[in-house]
Image 1 (tube, rainbow, N blue to C red):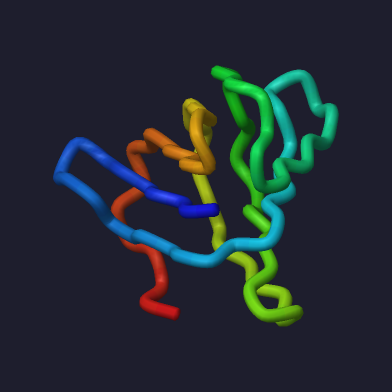
Image 2: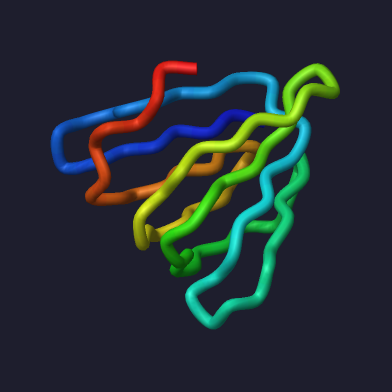
Length: 86
């Protein structure tokens, strides 16, 4: 699965070979997204994105965003532009 985090400035981060993604929806409920997830559009609240690549956990801080899932692609549209490089 692939994650793209995009702000008005363009693509801020692209992550390949993601095994799962976990975050919180704007209503406070957690959501986990695995490969081959059903199509989905939702609002996520500010917090942390947690994901795993090659059995290693990673986190990224995120502002309020829109989440779009389709065909093993997760796009996150956000206003936050200062993401870490790793």
